[in-house]
Length: 440
Image (cartoon, rainbow, N blue to C red; front, side, top):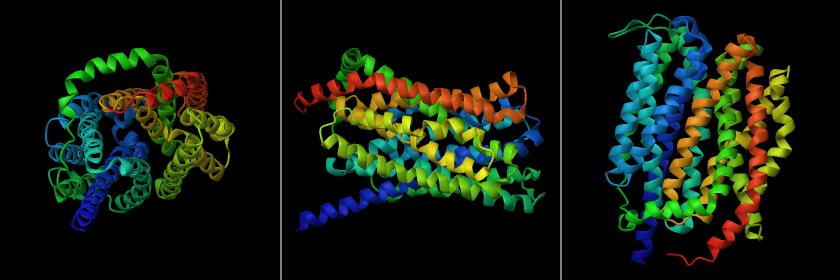
């Protein structure tokens, strides 16, 4: 009886930990995305080009987020994960606030670089904590719950961002200590950055669950990774191509759709903020629905269900994706944008699930870290920058932002579909061969 009560108390503590990590992940997305709603006033105040905007909104963040994610992942295997997360939160919260003090492109760029460095601490340590806190039967549920925070964070950024921008616009000229009169966009950055300094303290409201003995086999991981990659390089390469293309689609739209709505339809953040928030909530729910369908197909014997279903989803929704940036009605565009997220949102869920099926447990984290590194560099770093370059150098008009987005999104979606179809011939065999290997 006492053992059962202890198990229930342990699970309650573990779920509270997930709730705290969820809140921090939401906060990180708010701090990450809020700048995309402020493109117009920032361009006007700092006299930036679209390429410079892409550097501060996505590319600089992505490069340092990806680079620092690798050593911070290493540190999360060896040092206190709560302190690593807390340090990261403090860095990104202070850096976001500092962006509000920026009076030049260089100062804003430096602030965004530090936001990327700080946010790189969260995911490696969070996934490690969750893996150690939950029994195997609940691990996928806990991980999926945490992953949903990305879209909830996007929704929160667009909803609260619109409100914050409206508030800041109504209080133009507020004097900030050590700054003087603040522009509305600067006030918004301070408003979303400062709460992190307090919220970050929540990591000390739950205990560290301890580690499950991975260090004893860590020395063999390097050889295991090489053996695994050589055996499955075709499957891994095709998955990396397909999912990276979808990351480029998703991050390009997340970064540039607010500006596109302003330029093409004339809506202001207070108008489109709630709409984009609702779109992200719907896409978050789609994660659960897609996962349920794939689990059912896999249980019925479809060994390659994850990529096969993803391919079905892409080809079914491709007409909507192709039409999206040619829609002349803002409500039709928003509906298309919502549908398009059904294929751009879940790529990390599918990657983590496939790795769970085919990779030995001692190398899964490193493989996922590598995929995350590539996603961030290509998706968040290159995707929005390519859109900006097409707009500025190919179409030579800010009004052509929709055309640039259409080129990137349609081309990447088609490449992703082809990659997944080619990968099917390898996935089923990889899953079957893994099932034949005795569990360590």
